[in-house]
Length: 142
Image: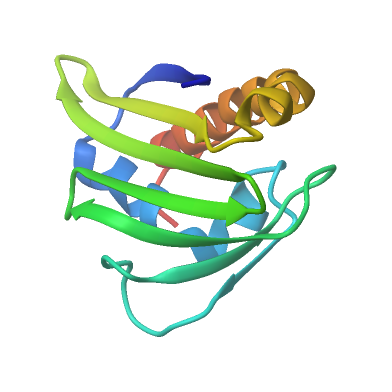
């Protein structure tokens, strides 16, 4: 299954990193690779929550949370004809604060061709997301 994994160490406690990762409504102001976010339901992210995400050079996608371990990780999926993209966000304690691991995998009959066309962009976006979460989590409290 095509995909990638990106890990970054963050000098902030896991609770601070988690707060940034799950606050998807604020992603457009924190993450330059996210243009717009629309939550399609109310309340905190839970299994079944849906979010519409708009990113430059990619089609607008609806992401549905499929797994959640509150305070530690969540996985969400977005499907289009022939391709399902699965993205995971994992926050773990680390001796210097936290470790954030972002993974993206693609599956489905058109996944190989889709991955070939978007691999470089996806790698850049995932790296930018990790760096942006790091910056936001390490910033002094607002």
